[in-house]
Length: 313
Image (cartoon, helix red, strand yellow):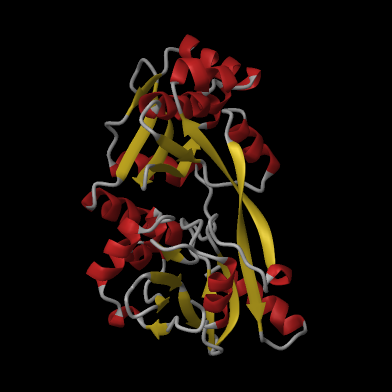
């Protein structure tokens, strides 16, 4: 397989969207982040490593800054790497990593949970996402919540909170701008706004919220679905509502509404202990994916400064 696999590097305008997206539809490890229209929002101008038959696809979120060509994992896009409807061996993953053009002098990219490597273990770091099988809610899901999670859900019920999926993008953006976590401030909001618009166009967006008896929004979440997996993309809560269990009630509502439908909820992280504890409180289990890094930039203080700036772009 390795000797016969021809891999081409394609610029965005050279990629056949229909063939690409059909391949992602059929990929055994396909996810929402790998569709052309999703990548166009979070990483405009991306490129890819592609076999001529489009059986193997490896998106590359490419950029250029300070005269440096580099590859950096975009925000709102947890896992990329190699996608295929065929068997993905560590040997094939290694072959694609080897095929990343040398002109990219700095690489910091996440593979997906189905990608393993033999050759590049020293250049990878393990990261965690938390995933929950949405089985029968009463018999198999709720009983696995920990006591803190159950307590917060009951607290939210006592406060007469209600789950709604009738919020619009403006409702989400208003709350997230006030209470959500952002790396680049207004730049993030512009991307989030475009991402919601695009997900709605493709019928892939669910905006959920928790409201009180006065219809005041206390917590919001943006979810998307692909390949029987629901991804929790973004969420935020007003501090006082957060204390009353609003975020626990929000996640529980999504779980309850999708249980017994042969789906998985991907919480998307996190390496932050408090967030990981929140996710695991719902019975979610950690799954490992790899972050691959490579740099041919000159060492020294300039390198540290450039890396810091590149990661914030």
